[in-house]
Length: 268
Image (spheres, rainbow, N blue to C red):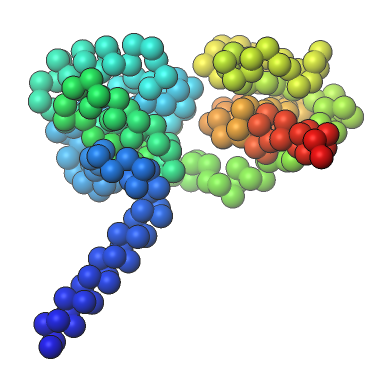
């Protein structure tokens, strides 16, 4: 009888832990065939692994795992570059990673590799933020290592600089702010929100981004920035604060939220 009770308790405990993991890592449920590695295991085995950052160049240059190779998932030659890497590394495990627990690029990267028979590729799905917080000596922030975990921007700090699309639009109209549209050309599709008032620049064009940041600081102007979905700008925040710019705001939800708000106004 006691044995049966222990078995039942063990089952419920396993189910609870499993459910919590799926909730924390939603990608694991979506990509059941993708093998993954936990944070501490990845750190302990780091000398035997090859880390590949599959995010954008701007994200990689802002914060990354020390020694990680950059092969963005969006790169048209992603498969070819991964095949080349596998050829160079022999049977050494390749670990793909992205931003965090709700980011699915690492799973997509592994799935794509499996599709093209690139073997021994796994996902590190806890992401760069958890890694940098726990193992700052093995992370690079704005080109410097080791990093100070206090310099990592958490969600609460990021949210202080988010304003609604309505308030964003109001500030564009009533202030002398410098407005930046940092969507890439594919996201933008030729559509500007603030025609004649905004500057267009992709985050991957770091030189021009820095020029606009320097301009905002030099002219003591508030910086208003929006992207496609309100997530990419979080990485830009590191560069804004490094420049010493105090007055800046991001459009909450990005251009997507802006157009959704417009649709609600005119589509009844």
